[in-house]
Image (cartoon, rainbow, N blue to C red; front, side, top):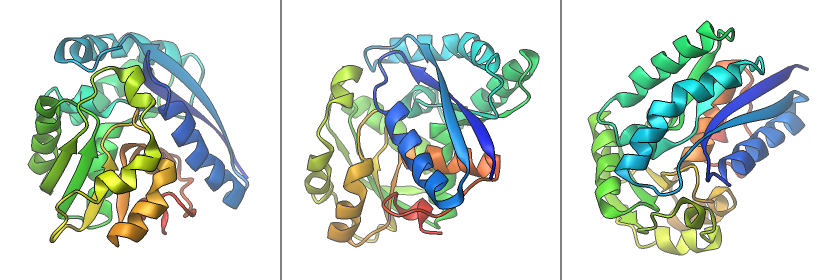
Length: 247
């Protein structure tokens, strides 16, 4: 049995990442006996717009350096679109930059990102073609689609819910997601990304969506959880958390 401190870098308006990732890791803790504590730092962002996302990225070094003071064992930059909006492959440079920042502040730990985790998770389950749901305005969804396709994964279809207020995104009803996902064109798809956003609630809707669509389901939050656990060497399969946690 081991104990880990998990660091989360989140938008100031985040309300979901600090519930869904801890819930997945709580299930892992129940299965393994490991213990996880969570320590978050915030970067200002209220509206999911190009300008606020860019400003948040610029503030990430400050937030990572402060979070390093908590002596965390791993750190996640938990805003997918903030990274994907910066252009193809941006997660590699941002993860490297924040890893260096954290090390300089005294915490030589892996820094993962929701953007990198989603891409890595889809490759891990062998998904070559996906359909996805986002809360974003259509131009940002197009950025996300381009980013994922640049990583070698075709996007068959995408639904944009067109909500730009990040607090409102966190208040979306996850119980509607199976119905929303049923409108996706999933012909030939290997998996569905039920929420390409860590702020849009989705964890509770995964089992019903998988049953309805008969396809593996991944979300930004479950991918981030999987990547965090992999970095710690603490992964374990658990029920109800989608394709990455089936073992």
